Image 1 (cartoon, rainbow, N blue to C red):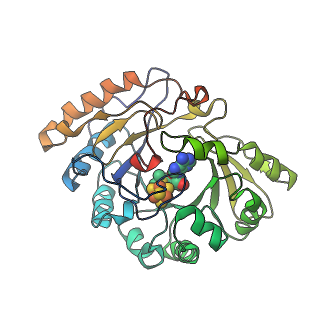
Image 2 (spheres, protein in one colour):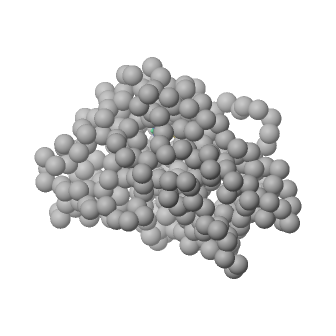
Image 3 (cartoon, rainbow, N blue to C red):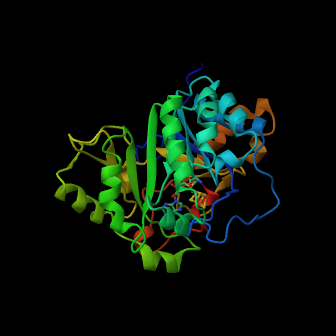
Length: 329
Ligand code: SAM
Ligand code: SF4
């Protein structure tokens, strides 16, 4: 492959990692994300397979080697497995991951693995069936847990569990989550609830700083792992008696943005330089034929000049993102 300029910004950060949303549609209605379920917006269709392949080829030639498929719920897209298989074949892509709410995972985990997916993040916000239902709108905790087991059996190399920390909803389950990973080689990540345009009141009621997790872990004899060069923004903790590790993703913490190594593209083909950036930059017109790849790459590199050093969440500026289902979290 011809050597091209790698994607970098004016602050010295490089971006080997792309989070690619394949649909905004979701079949769950998580109370912090889509409390009233998915509602269609606009009339542009989601990117078609050939547009997705062109996009990933362009990024891969600019040094991107890790792709995470996300959504909405990526697996509700009928051609999800075909998309994964096509991306898996693109030269330069060494890691193909996805984030899912675990719907039908028990039946489909093997199919996902066989398509080339090797890393899976499964969202589980409560280990109590009733609470799980209250938070996600679905009484499916046991199905999702069976899906975690099926992912082990399928051979996934990395299994992570995402848990959004919610005051008054799951903050009394910290011990239970810590015990849960004791015999499982998974990384469970507590994610601080992020404020979006649509969840301001919910945020006020349920946001809990990540320090609640840190304090609990230290109290139980866990220790922070030293940060490794190139790692993402999660602070990881370990304990010699636990097969699993615990991570904390705290976007409101100081220096969170310094380790930013990812870009995002929405299901409609807009490049988002920051999860909380203002709007996105449409790449759609450059995705229409194979001979546009250089033009597309020039556009991506030019847009990197607009990436800011940090988000402005502390100032209460959550950008215009209505919810994270529109950009994949
Ligand atoms: N539907 C898939 C799922 O839930 O795993 C993928 C998309 S979802 C937007 C990706 C991740 O973002 C999930 O782990 C979800 O819990 C998290 N998320 C959504 N809204 C959030 C918010 N306001 N604050 C923090 N995390 C959020
Ligand atoms: Fe759907 Fe994921 Fe948002 Fe829940 S967090 S509503 S599963 S997109």
